[in-house]
Image 1 (cartoon, rainbow, N blue to C red):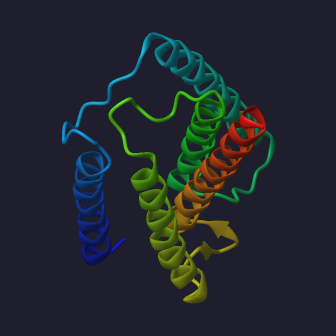
Image 2 (cartoon, rainbow, N blue to C red):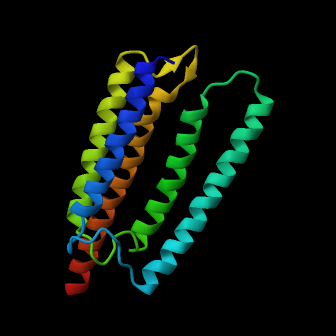
Length: 178
């Protein structure tokens, strides 16, 4: 791997950290970066973390067993790890969203939804560019350049779940009012 690729990865990680910091500040109603949850939300989030942990645990076990049983590798280490992490995050996010524990008490849901939509689009754009340039698969193996595509899919899943939950809540309120 050339020095330019290494520097590019480092710069990409730094930009990601800056975006996350901005996002944390941007989505809060009170300007505080710390999320505030009530007791019910904290309990639901705890169960979400548990489900997420076991999802990652099972994924890693399956990936490890397949690595022993199948001689040819189809995914490099970073891409495989990101798939597992994104799978676990998706389980956590979807569980918490459907159980009304995803947004903190001091968060602006609309800003989060818009932010996740933008993050999804940015990651998908970068992933599609890498796919178009033929850099996502090397020697028949999904490589680290697929990470943006993988993260883009994660954020699309979260974004769609947020939209579906908002629609569900809207219809439930309308039903209760009638």
